[in-house]
Image 1 (cartoon, rainbow, N blue to C red):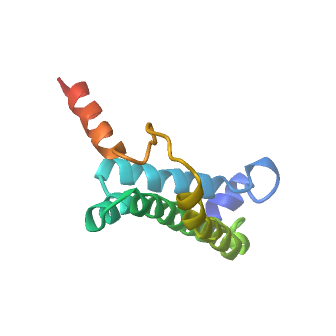
Image 2: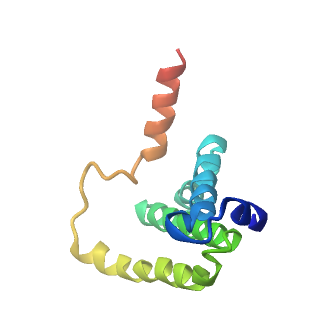
Length: 123
């Protein structure tokens, strides 16, 4: 990766973090096409949408950490990215207690909706 960064002069300017973006979104795309999903696993091993939310957050944090460690321009931010990603998890108990969830919440049933969309699309 560092050779690519040097060849394309990505360490400076607006393309700083390019590798991070490619790796981060690449991990999400691989997860989508392989069906691998932490939030689906947690939803199956527990009851409720909270496991799905936590799973999605953990998957996102893992993608962030992997991407930041592979991108030399973002490596120094890896710990901050990890801690910044984990901090909002502390608010889940408060949100669960005091915020009314929307009936069209995207975390509930999202995989079933995607699966149905794919079946409809394959005709």
